[in-house]
Image (cartoon, rainbow, N blue to C red):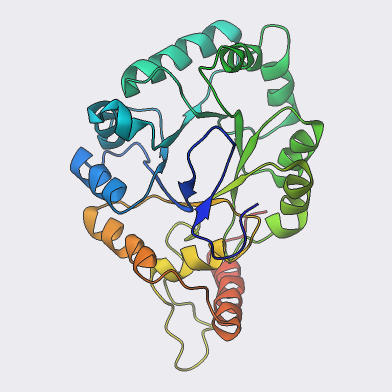
Length: 277
C-alpha cells in the first residue's frame, strides 16, 4: 500500500500510477466532459464510472490512445448471471470506447447469497475472469457496504481490489478491512469520504469556535490512512470539483491535532446524521 502522503499509488505493476484523489460520477449527469477533462489536466487519473452515459463516459471516448493509456478506468457492473454480465461488460466497453476496462467492480455486493450466485457455475464472475485472462480486464473489484462480507471475500483471494465506505464518521474499515487488504496486498478505494455531505456541516454538539472544514480536509483525512489507495470524490458541479481539487494544491497531511479534531467531529456526525454499520 502507498505510504501516508504520497499522493500517488500503484494498484498493479502493469497499470499506470494513479493520483490518490479519484473522480466518480453518480448517474445524475452533474459533470460534463469539459469538467472531466479539467480534472484530468490537474492530474486526476483514477476514474470510476457509474454505468450510465454521462460526462465521464463522453470524456473518455474523446481521449486519444496516449491519453487513455495514462488512466485507470473503473466501472460498476451489477449483473449476476454469465450472459447478463457479458452484455453489461460489452456495453460498458462500447460506451467508454475502450478495449480494456481496467477495474470492473461487482457493484452493491451486500450478502453472501448474492456472492454465491455471482460466483456460481452460471454466474457473472466467470465471465469477467475469462475477460481478465484475455487481457480485457486488469483487476476485479468488489463494491460493498458490508465490511465483514467484503473482508471475507478478500481473504478468499477471489478479488483484486475493494471499494469500501470510509470516512471520519464510518471508520470501521480500520479494524475490519485494512488489515485483511494489507495482508492480501489488495488496494482499497474509499468512497463516501464526506459522509454524503454531512462532515463539512456542523452538528448541535460542536464545541465553541469549531467550524467544520470544507471537503478537501475530509478527503485528506481519508488519505491519511496508508490503507487507502484512492479516495473517490463525486462532485455535483464544477464549483464542487474545483473545491475538491484544492487538495492537490497543498498536498500535506493533517497535523495530529487537526486529525483528532476531524475524527471527533466524525463521531458527532455519526451520532446526529444517522447510524450506518
